[in-house]
Image 1 (cartoon, chains in turn brown, yellow):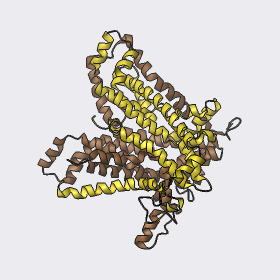
Image 2 (cartoon, rainbow over the protein chains, first blue to last red):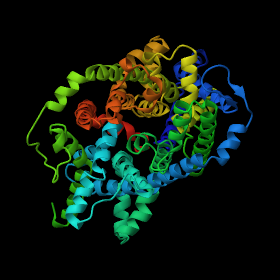
Image 3 (cartoon, helix red, strand yellow):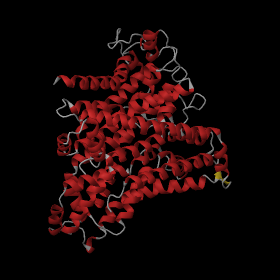
Image 4 (cartoon, helix red, strand yellow):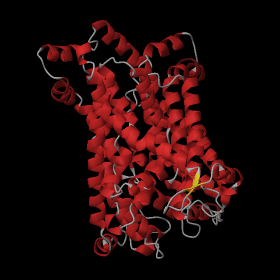
Length: 313
Length: 272
């Protein structure tokens, strides 16, 4: 969304510049009034909480009474907390699944849906999008029942086909990660497809015709025409799925409870557990600050590298 | 359809099955007696067919209260956020002002703050200031989505010509009057798209209500269903029925307004 916004917004800016709509001193308060509700809410419910998080992370607090100042102790504890390391590692795996499996798959599907003369394009696009509007409770329930070791449909099918089907999808540490990854693929692919498809449809036909005249094959057309044209959309999709996967919570919480042996514990689950199950608010805040630094820092880096977010420069 | 298209359509149908089979399985399971839900091979059409799961859900659980709670909260959150986004989107689309670039960057960067970062402090702030009442606090995380502002800004830049606004100014209309009588009506399709999306976000939300709501009389739908899901008896027959009922309005809403939503979501990504 964003990079392309950049291109578009800039031209609009130039246009309004030449026509001189907004350059009216007597109206200069108006834009600030229009954007002020957002910034009021932003400060109250985003900026203040981030600041409070920073402060809480330097305290020890059980949620009652006065927080007790402990300096950087929470961070030192995090540095040696094996559970936190697992949570970071697992979350990194989920991020990799999102960026390296879900994103390419979405691009592939979008490419198929962009085939010239495809029938019922709206039907496919709509149907593939549905999983993202389904309540995570139903998603967890469905996959929990499908992956059930004894009675689950997946194992029943395996048993019928291969005679063996005692696979412990949710009970084995590595398989549990695979199961969560499968759910992520199921839930997110169709959503991301929509962005790629929109990007593909915006590529001028002439470019493809020119490539065809030059005798470029399918693969060559894809790498020389499609991919460069898709760069802004890809950048947006990669950053979005990175941020989404970095805060994954519902899938592991409802499906595996973070287990077995914390093999699916995510950072968000770690924060939730520390604050709301163990009343370690300071410790949870410190973990949140680490998450903030990682996600915010990396997305700013991506944005810089990929040229996103300069919408109204 | 040429012959070479067969593999393509075959693949698309397989994908459709992969995305839909689990949902159909759940739908069909909600009409099966508990013992049949795990039956193999799975039957698409329940036999025997029963409404027992639904009847027990309604008689044993306050399903409609959960549903009402979720719906009302989502509607309020949607109304507030759509208004906030339309205002700010208009401000960014049609005005030049000092600090615009910085303010835009600040707004943009809020997209990369994970909710988990503000989860604990937001909870603490709202509870400590006495604003922790679910009716107020449940809507808070959804009232100011930066992505909605982009959507609005894009749409306004593309579809509302400066000349219209200029003419109204010459006629002496106030700035807010222009927004209300000219911009908002022209924005309608885009507002609809954003509204659907925001509604679904709030309606399906789980983590924030989980943290915030402790009184079972104020449970939202996902929370209520979750208590059945994790209870000792693992009442998955009831959860299936409830989850199907919860999902049907969401999917219906999406299907009806899919054109606006899908185009609205990808607006910026595309016609750039």
